[in-house]
Length: 335
Image 1 (cartoon, rainbow, N blue to C red):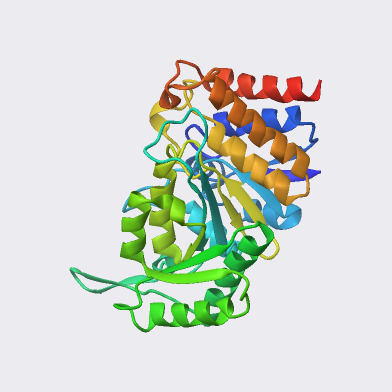
Image 2 (cartoon, rainbow, N blue to C red):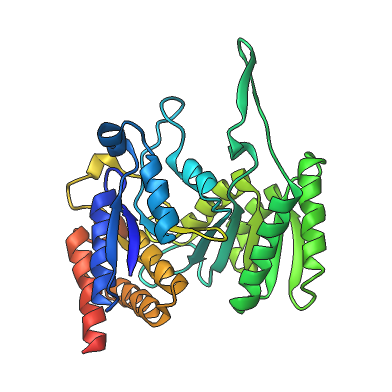
């Protein structure tokens, strides 16, 4: 089985290598097909996201990706945005759940953030009107609205979840979010066996930091989803432990949601758990559900035992010690 591997920048090569080791230890034989993206790709291919990389993902359909650096306010456009638009990866899926050994203010958090990935302000349609005035267009279309809300309801239905919360700001953006809300209500009517609620995005933020356990599946547009998914990661320990997936009708890219952390690159200090758990999501996606479940269980038991943990998790270990600890539990289970 061939799957594309985009190592990325900074700590990307270290944490994706760790994930590959864990996948192999789980007994899944994958022939990884390397592909370039990020700052390194600029040096080797002349651009941050070579067309060759998109071609490889289109050929093999599935990719595991490490973090890529995006310059702030200058330089090239976000690689993640270009990947999502180029492959029509319209659904960002971020499962957010408490993990043992990771101390947070909340317990019992178990929710999924579903984010529309291709439109909104992230459509990248900006221009200078006159010097000192920039206009950004927020694109919302009925087909994109309907398919992301339907995706959220199908995720709830097949995943044994019972509540879908649509997050919006239709009281202010009456046309754009108004259309999105109208579509959400229409799709919700097709799922009478699931609960549906609609909440202004500011109320959602307030309620998340007061009692996140009341939420189950949250669905929203692109910019709101970018902010809320990171907020939710903070509820359970941060971006270093939360996996992510970008899914479309034909293609899927699984990736950690944290940055490339160039300040610790090459030092063996990076926490690989987010990428390892993203790899587990990838295995579940391709039908290797037993192996995916075993990896998740090994991560949980490693955290519970505080074995080999990296500094961000309160330990003194390294990328390798944490990866080794997860693999020990995988191999012990299969022995």
